[in-house]
Length: 184
Image (cartoon, rainbow, N blue to C red):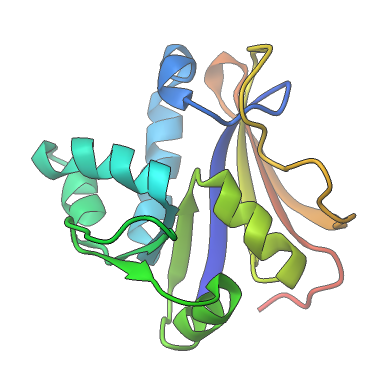
């Protein structure tokens, strides 16, 4: 059974929107290695429409020597959207109930199902207990405004810290599992 992994860049004030505007100054070789390992462990991606469209506009033309771009481009993508009708870039639009579709996706996937960004997807799946791991890459910066990772009104959701890694430039990776969930 697959594991749904939410991997998000977040500022100290909880903003996850537009990391291309604030994260690059803090990136390091260690951060790159972390993201590379994370992508290589994934069998599929789960994205919201906005993240999908941004990724699909950029990634198909990218290349690199370590295989990151090839992996990013070749992974199957599942897009949560009620407005998107056509996809490219090895993607399909999820039809019907998102929670039901993700349950089915977990059943037919053996590796990680990586959610990159996509706060609306995270907020839709969290109440259903469908996210198995939350990976937060916390950047030492306050941006003051923007879409926050967790929406107002989300029910109390206890999490257990399972890993912490300090990276150069003050970035911290925090990994959480839903509290009380047995480790696989």
